[in-house]
Image (tube, rainbow, N blue to C red; front, side, top):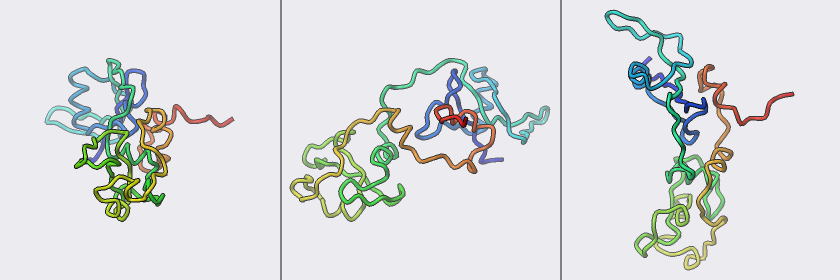
Length: 182
């Protein structure tokens, strides 16, 4: 029970975030329920007990107040990899996130900033080969120019959810943008 997580939905019953998926620990979900900040949507078949009560652990909750989402996604390592489709932007090698680094196109030591427009996913060999040079100086052209993605682009680039890793009570809320079977 210790590793159970609760899917958090906005007041419109859509996940607050897909990248990463908006999850709380079950204890934080209980706290929010008791403070009347969320509505219980679904529960696990597991109970948490206190000396006087036994309550089912929440699997899905919805915020009572709508949270307006930022127009642009957060600048995170995962979102950079997602934007670049988990591929090195110098050689094109596709790797899991653990096999990637991020590279400053204009090196930080030369005034380059950590921004969407100056950071790309890179494999370690390419990152080491480029070193403290620009792609032009290293004769390593970029496959795609770095740019700020939209939330929509990242949502549609994320790997398909593995249905086996999510509780069945979550599935109705994760696939609103999916095409329906006819």
